[in-house]
Amino acid sequence: MSRFSLIICALLALFLAGCQQNTQTEAAPAPVMVKEEPVVRAAPPPPPPPAAPVRMMPNLIDTKLVYFAFDRSDIRQEDRAIVAAHAEWLADNPRLRVRLEGHADERGSREYNIGLGERRAQSVRQALMLQGVGGSQIDTLSYGEERPAVRGQGEFSWSQNRRVEIVYLP
Amino acid sequence: MYPENQIGRRPALTRRLFLALTFLLLSVPATAQLRIVVDGGVPNPIPVAVVPFGWVGSGLAPFDLAEVIDADLARSGRFAPLARSRMLERPTAGAEVDYGDWVQFRAEVVVVGRMEQVSEDQFQVTFQVMDVPRRQQLLGYTLSSPRADLRTTAHYISDVIYESLIGEPGIFSTRIAYVSADPDDQRRFALVVADADGANQREIINATAPIMSPSWSPDGRDIAYVVFENAGTAIYVQSLATGQRRLVSARKGVNGAPAFSPDGSKLALTLSDVNGNLDVFVSDLATGELTQITRHPAIDTEAAWSPDGGSIYFNSDRSGGPQVYQVASTGGPAVRLTFEGTYNARPRVAPDGERLAVVHNDAGKYRIATVSPRSGDVFVLSNGQLDESPSFAPNGSSLIYATRDGDRGVLATVSTDGLVRQRLDSQGRDVREPVWGPLRSTRLAARSRADEPLE
Image 1: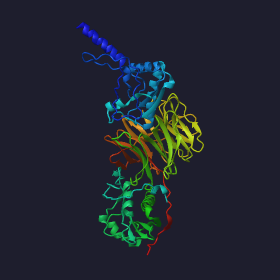
Image 2: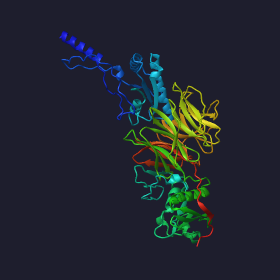
Image 3: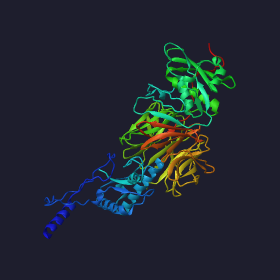
């Protein structure tokens, strides 16, 4: 059994090294205006088909959503790894550009919420720049409360809407 | 008369009038209708009888002026109109009014009138307002109107009656603008202009991305607004008459919260710098010259002008949360005005400059409140959970604002004394960000006193 496990691990490693998934993790039901697939790196030779089903582990930069606490724009502890992963990816690929789209929940006045969304986008931008990403690689855009990911009231919906979406540009 | 009234106007097909203080206006068969329900009123509304006008001409009368006048007065919450079914007499001139009978019908004011066809397109309207307790005429006028302006004429008559009895200008001839969204399609938005009674709704712009923050020019000819386009935002000023629009700002970053100055020559707006810091600026609409008004790392936005144009009120969270500040409209130090509560945003100024309306967090609920700029005293007016976007009526008597009915955005009004409330429901659409247009000077031809009934 140990040799079998070894093969599985090797295949897993090859698989992880090679593939780029296209999962969309945000909850928005309809496609947002300009949303692009991430650039796919040149793939290494495809691994041989696995002998048994392989459990796939997601890549951190497949997560393009960062969430925020109410009235806050600082990056939460649990999102730091995601931001770091994007920072590394962008720093390694200086021709890549992103647009950070900031959002707020529906409470309060709309133009102030534009400000909150912008503040959140800037927070992610600064974190990326601190980790080596060039300022010219980053655009920001705030939607305030105008493009909710989840409609409806209550803390769950609101928490899903307080977010920054990391959109890779073509 | 008003070219913009004749563009995209849809004729009303059916109207039903429910009596007492509840009215249902089914006016337009198109996608969106505004239904207005009056909730509450002053303790002693004036009992008024608006008698159906007489008609001199061929065929049926082209328009029921009395019905519109009746609905206008009822909607103000300050009048209690008498049901037509209870009018056992139908005088059309002051001399025909039997005061004793109208005392019995419990009317204090009787409005009588008649319409006469002068030519194919031209009509003469005479109306007289009779004071029942004093048994005399209060006022009377003869007006001339083309066919297409008969509805406008009715609203004008309502304004005259309202002003003479209540003592402030009427707002029945005004318009509102608001943003309409399709709740089932995140890519359908429109900016709509409608009469204050919900009639004559007209989309002045459609977009597949959000529209925000409409602002009327002081002469009512233009509307400024924000759109999302080209992976950013832009502020346009659009002419209602022609539909032409011009770009005022599409700078990188935020372009938001446009607000016309009282003389119409400038637009306050919110811009952001490369670090995403929002500040208030003023743009000269003729020259494009930009003046920075606030300079602070906090969010500074939502500018509104004082009636004399000398000050700008805005929302800043420089003290930790949104509060209202005042600054000279040429720039300078900002003074904080609100100290009650943790959240006071989106200031709007009453026409007399004596009060501001704000979005105020009242124990966790977002409500509309008025604030005295001098004392900072807050008076909560609305009673929802997520109320926003207040806008004063141009006579200062009421505020229109956005609220929720379940998941849907709806509009509501509340009088500034809190007594009269209306709900406006655009069935099926998600409506938001209402703004009340200015008073309109109605120029009706050949207005003359009508002290004697015409033969």
